[in-house]
Image (cartoon, rainbow, N blue to C red; front, side, top):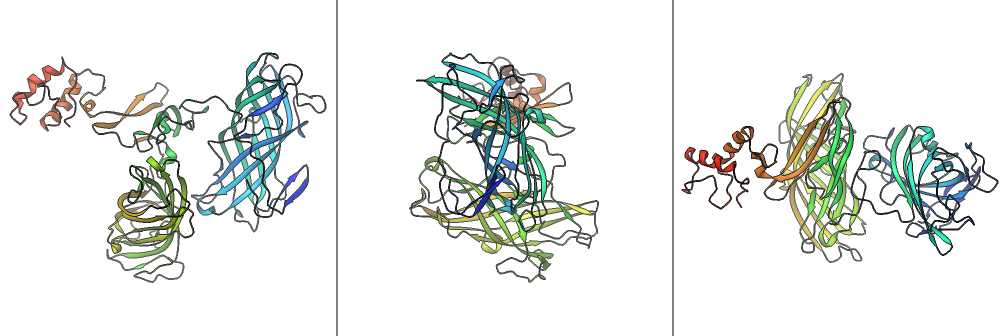
Length: 614
């Protein structure tokens, strides 16, 4: 990690300015080794080591502009005794640990340095800072057996607190964690003896809280809030984990799946419909386009915009974003065989006026004016198209986030201002954007819209809600992406133009609840299984099952009368056969008639279900 601009931080009340570039040593991939303390074990915390979060980042989400976050990459290190805050025990001078604590072993009190590499997203894209927060920590550990070559025991972050002072962007910045503060952060540690030293393998599942207030003159001015979330910090080489829910059921653990094109994604969840609370019950390694549970934060957000004073809403809907929850964009042409680039789009940050040509000239600061091909209005604006890029096949391992500023012109049909529900057609007339100076893409152009021969029809509904309007909208975007790879990039020597289509949408589900999304292999379908629980919650699971299971309501291999009605309907449509003579066409005359049904139903009670015809 390298500092390339003037930055400052405070340690023990002293402000330190970083004026010259320098490099910090990299520990993340190194083992954590500490000496025997003379008693057949290791003194803790592990001085000289550091905890990182290789599979996740911390977040600030509350109190920021809509569609924006701050992502914080943590490094937790520089353990010093004693701590500067209160502790439930008082260790000897220069020693961090003493008997006691909630786990029946020892209590460890110390000061540490929490480095946070901060990156803004959405409206805060381009904000990059490195923060150094001195924190007071108290950790409790369970008993261990000194002298054993392997000592494995539970741990818990009892308290962690720290604060910044004098920062130019954060007039308030406080970070807290630990069970004593209502933020449980359990963990585990293994000490393995190695030639007089101990290798430390440890993690904490940290529930953290970050409170901030932006400073005058900063891009954060006027913003502030408190975010609570969870993350795993680890040091050494903790044992590999299976794909499954994390400790509080909020996410699936990021693991290396056997197939590098797969991710650990939710398979089953428990849902409280009254509150929208969701807990993940089971995860599985699957392609992110394969049948899985989509959590509420993956579903389109409710888009609310104010009345513009004329009984309708100004378009485009500022502060909202279009996503594609059920699909991705693709680059397929001009790549290595069996490789693709998958691009997850977010279309947002609408600003008037646009920077390109427009068929109308709206007033300054206004996006829309009468005109356009649909007889209503034409809307001209600039937007930000974020593309989260993932390579597949020979490009597996390529992961990028691209931000493409695009000029857009949208045409809408007439609407009736003052109506409580205004529903009208829309059309992406033109969308164009290009990257410059990218290290991987020497050329990257994206185009869409009927004016460019890429028809992209859509629809919009405005529903009045207490002086505001809820916007529900979609565009079926026919897009074209042209690219040329740069020298030195994995894309060097490749280039081409891909044309495809995708649905971008925004809107609201009221209280968003999980749903099954994604595709399945040929001959299978993504089935949603729901089990109602006595406590008012329900369990939802999503799995690919043979299409034939649509005739077996429970997909349990048993046919009952409830199944037969649906299955017979499928037979009449000639969907199923198994090629062995036990098929829907008993007479093998090329058509299915009622004379075929009775003998076939009799066969179903004695034979396995037929499979789909190839």
